Image (cartoon, rainbow, N blue to C red; front, side, top):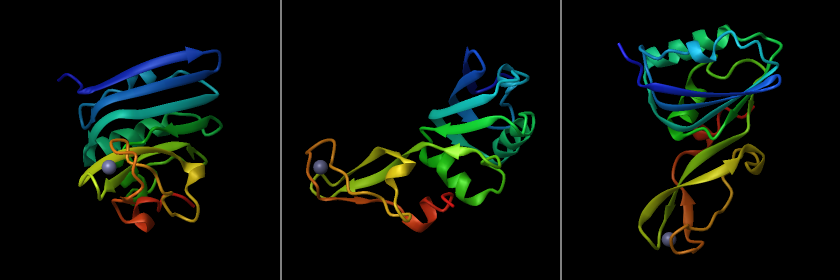
Length: 155
Ligand SMILES: [Zn+2]
């Protein structure tokens, strides 16, 4: 069966950057990103559309193949990834750093939702920062999820 997950692996000296695209499920093949023996791994989830329960298991198995000494960064986590982080123990490997994510917001003036890119350092005490609407540049926006839940991965 063909994998609906695409991995774009870029290796520079002892750091690898792995861009994940598509769907993580039971057919996902992490072979391209396995046995790289890098000191540092950056996973970019920007183009991940969905992940199912089998995919979560494949992901956690894959994390187990990475040395415990390696530095791991989770970048550009989409909503589906953030939700797993809050619910599934081990989804974020022990010691890994979540660097940035997309957060759902709603603009009252446009009556429309949008995703805003946040660095985790901008989230203070699990509160989403105020942001401007990308369409109308207005400030009549609000975070469109439950903050305590969405940011529960932050220790
Ligand atoms: Zn707006």
